[in-house]
Amino acid sequence: MRPGRTAGFGTTVGRFLLAIMAVLLLGQTADAQTRFMYLRGQNVSPAFEGWWPNDDGSFTLFLGYMNTNWEQEFDIEIGPENYFTFTEERGLDDLELEAYDASVADQGQPTHFYPRRNMFLFTIRVPSDFGTDELVWTLTTRDKVRRAYASLKPDYRIDPQVISTEVGGAFGSLSDALRYNIPPDLEVEGDMHRTISVGEPLRVVAIASDPDNLPARSGRSRAPTTLNQLYRQPSSVVASSGPGLRFSWIVYRGPARNVTFSPIQMKTWTDTRMYGNSAWSPPWLIPEPPPDGRWVAEATFQEPGEYLLRAVASDGSLFSYENLAVTVTATP
Image 1 (cartoon, helix red, strand yellow):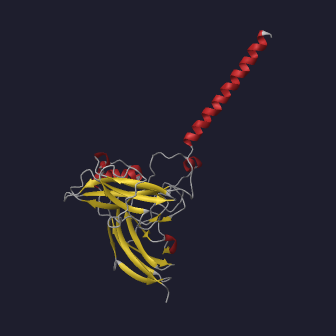
Image 2: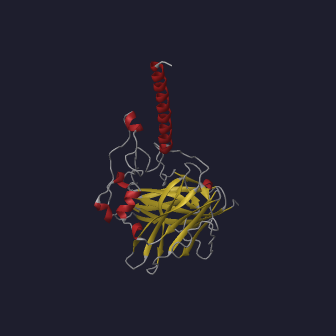
């Protein structure tokens, strides 16, 4: 065989092998960077957000959840699939251990789960002698058990600035002034337990204000004006939210599919899609508060039952909550 032909054959094989290796490497890189958006069929994971100390020596634990779906919502009643347990450190690391105790299962957690990330959604106060114990939240969706382990470990200590950073407040600002931010004042008018019939509108009124105007509302529009701005990659690892007082009603307990609000409420979960009616949706346009600070809405229920509506006020960095219990009776 002629030397020139041998060299050519070797060069061809070498280039072929290099091409195969390049394809494999590119495939692995693509797989590593692939991000899927699941509309349905995924699970909900509880989340321990952190803790801070209170003046009386007790501690406040902050919790929320992540629903991996973008559309599917869940209703999980307090019980063996949605419960809290007090335990010693690492006492429930084994997910196969069942620790349901009806006497402590209900710690104020939601039973309706909206899509995506719902951060700092509720708090639990534990006594000064909580020590190294853990408060464990167990959630089961689609036969998958997930747990969040709330503890007083130093790494989980937070302050208002940390909360703001985690929720992308003030467009992700790291200003030290946010350490002293005060959450909105919030009050629900009228009785905190109402009774109404199916199909009958329930008027709900909330009064909210931002006592320190921090972070200050931004009048600057962030609507994209070019295709490059529209399709640019996110500049932060967390979703950003615009500053400014906002308010919404959500269904905290009970099937949200049976409840409609008028006007439609801004989402309180991190819908990051363009114009998604969420504070995290580009172009981050936060509606101006009503002049008198009174948010008026009507809630209509399609099925009888017990519901818990939650009033949610936020300045974009911290949240305030009030619950309104509603008993819905069948139409006479």
